[in-house]
Length: 264
Ligand SMILES: Nc1ncnc2c1ncn2[C@@H]1O[C@H](COP(=O)(O)OP(=O)(O)OP(=O)(O)O)[C@@H](O)[C@H]1O
Image (cartoon, rainbow, N blue to C red):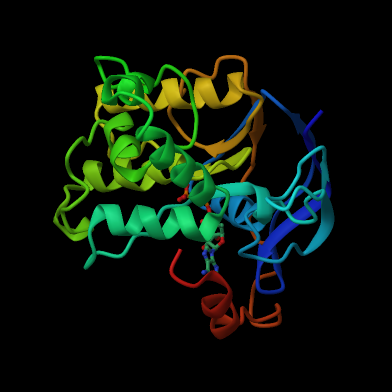
């Protein structure tokens, strides 16, 4: 069974430890909700899991998770979607172009989309659209072409609009649509429902439930319940006051961070 195990994992910025050590395991079909006050280190933990920051110490062990080549995944980043505070979408190009980039970049999707496009010749349009019910909810969670992924997050017909033209909530929803254009068993989500209205939160909770129901794993920092009553919780307590982060503490290498974190 797929499982992630965090062992003595300490995360930080540069050489400065921010949070941990963490000892927790999450298995297929389970969610881990990361909570804690502002600045506690939730994003730092998620970015570390996503491979955007190196851990200070400790390990993340993967079991039963295969990369797109079918071999056991060595890094969580190879089998995970990461949606952070920033959307990871380019403002100047269309929403559809952004999603097509992610489908190609994250791999695994291109083949499925090509297969579906090929199948379309043999299938009626009605059959093809049947993965979305009338209210736009997915009847099954699978890899979707960008236009259908957008419909699944409540943005039908917006694929030709520049991403930068969307409202804050629409941008969030479009960035969440990339979870659907490529299959990745682990979803790492940083405040996924920020800026979402109530209906969009419910729609997204439905997507998360379906991902878990299909054996996926979700690690999310969120202040909203996401319908995850049975989720495991990891509460990060803020660093104790007066810790040694004064002039003698190791400096944060901003240039190295910027290079590692890129535009995500
Ligand atoms: N790029 C950075 N360089 C240096 N320190 C940073 C950087 N980003 C965050 N930090 C520091 O790391 C600590 C943890 O920040 P982090 O963003 O992980 O907290 P958080 O729990 O996600 O907070 P929030 O709830 O506000 O999103 C904070 O003290 C913050 O100032």
